[in-house]
Image (cartoon, rainbow, N blue to C red):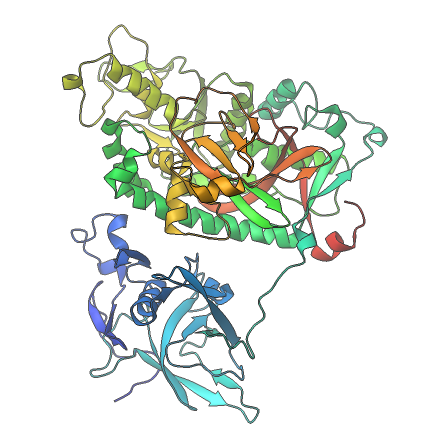
Length: 640
């Protein structure tokens, strides 16, 4: 009844075709995406798989099948992962009903702990499973073979009467080692994962030295550097930066102008992995919000723009150019505060200025933490659908001037033309209701430093001055004779494509934080958050945040005794609030220190550091140069 290895001779079945049933009656389906019906799967959200309301993954990938099989047969699931091979690094699964964590042990191929029916089999990235790796469920184990159930391999029906997809050869050595041979010669099996308290022969759970979580300070001898000018003011973005800073400085604090910060290579790897994982979690939460009208109402968005936000999500999910995570790193671990997915800043400081500072002052012991950022932004623009001329819209804020010019360099390097527009100067309607610039060129592609919320405020004001019966179900800007062009007219014009996409309003809104905590409770990177002040939050200290805000405005910090530690002013006091667990920034040489990671097209691209005398990082907080050094060097160095 069995067949072996490579599914040779099988007919490939269309997407969604039932291929067979694994133990427990769990169906497996074809994932031949080229044959997916545009009618049945009209948009990306249609590919998301849920069972009992629990998210399983994307139809019909290998990870989705493995998670669904475990849930149906065992009642537990493993955490979201970026790639299938990342499962091998997990050490727990979550019992969904009990909301309890259970141990998950990893055993490398060749282990003396043999696989068992129901365990996970994990492949490395590369070869047949390039970039992603693979995961399958082991259904049978003998001394000569294992049988596996899986999705996203072969797309052929399982042999009639079989509850598995393939059979892989196995060998047991005289020492009792169990080795499995992959069907594909260019693919390699990492090993298997068993949910068990027994960790004999298991891969160790790596617990890095807590000292690697430290942030270390260095000082350069600035007096020994004769040349004071280290930024090239022939470059417009660097000239604008020098003007803002009042000289060739990265920080406005005289006492800090010779200081830079150092993190370990292990921390760099954690930041990269955490940022990529969190991007996925925030995207999942965004879709969850957009599918729930009651939850979406908590984001306080004008009802008339909701259809456009959903349309943006369906059509432009992967078209984000830039975004930024803000983290606290302490001996207790790494925690994310929020995701700035719309109009994120500090890209030039991390991607250009800190590298020039480190080079000028001879701080070359490690690696510039933002060295790849500019090149990654160029690649993001090349991958985007932008064509021809990109208009860069900015306000008159000094930071936005050099930020816009830095991004213009990336756009040009990607082979696109661009113009920087200050405060919509020169933009107007033409006779056909299109928007044109002062040279008569149409505005079709826009990158902005303005926040989407600024345009929403204009729409809210417009609705407040009109009769309720006249308010449209779907907002469309119209030509306003005799009135100046507004930001909302540009950003919501149906012929204008904006970066960042409109959907970025959702993950940037602080209302996403309680949603994340409800979807991924006790996730090690998240902080407890709620729409209400719970007793759990109150007992440990909490932070109030407006659901919409910028630059640390209108935030209040309370300790476990409900004493106000600090609060910030701003223009967002009237916004609804969320409550988040208090997790203070570490203090280093008298300054509170926050790590930011920068994303390009949703992937980690670099890191930077911001410091302030205040517990809340804000628009006036300074950036300090950041380097990564090897763990050995980091631990052996006596400087701290």
